[in-house]
Length: 351
Image (cartoon, rainbow, N blue to C red; front, side, top):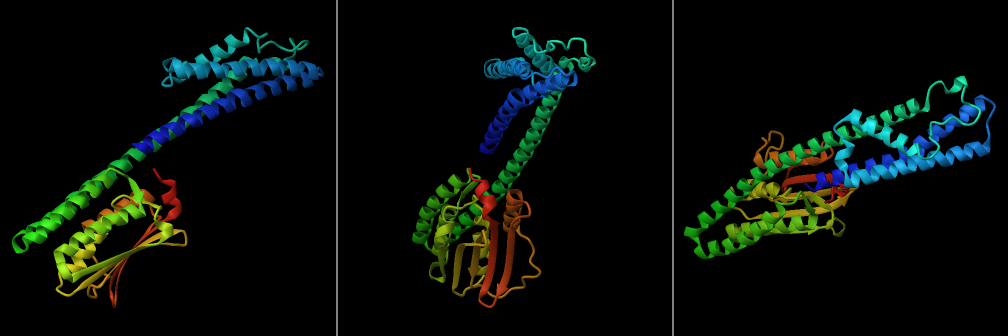
């Protein structure tokens, strides 16, 4: 929603800038050059006359610009943006009306009333100019509407992915509590308190499109702390976040599916002690987040895409199209999952 508001505001700024360019520069200069060309063609070019015409033309189009500013602010329905012909007629009517009070802009310079150079009336030229101007406005509006629709669809897809991630996360956590209630009630009680902190943070971030690396890592820390209660003395972890990455923007809840999969595949199925390391660094203008675990060696060539990885990949695809990197590999010391996101794109998507 914030992006749509920003888009509409930018569209309005572009419209006003185009109006200024047309009414204060392009239209006056075009008509002035037309008059100068006619005078030169008829050997009646005169600096004093050109100066008078220039003042008259800029006054007319300057006042026209002010009138449209007032109409858009106080009587926007009069503009009739839904009707091209109505817009064209209104522009011509206002220009001609204002010109009638200032020795009309369509009056020929002295001595040029009967020349063949003025066979095409300036009214036709101004009509053509305004038509082109309105066509450009219509194209800009269509582009903005198309982009707005695309942005809305993108937000909807992201919300769907987030809604799919939410139950996935909650079911895993509730199953954890259920298993601990009968085996270790005191530990289950601590898990409930930790879960409350985690859910509070999780639900807050679920309302955002982007967050900082620092905030995202706090959520990862809460989740791993919760898992330590589950596996007791069997799981350790550490998180390293480079100082220059703390304030960088990252899609909210992006890392949650990754840390869940790490626990699910590298820790939960095995009785051996496990260690998880999460690090964030800035490399060649890319934010690189790496998850390392001490799980057993696995075949990293034939991995099937699960829900967690699918949610992560589609989220990155919607935010960054093809400008991101994901990799999962097995090493002698365990698994390594890497997420790479270009910092430049992240900074341009800040909210």
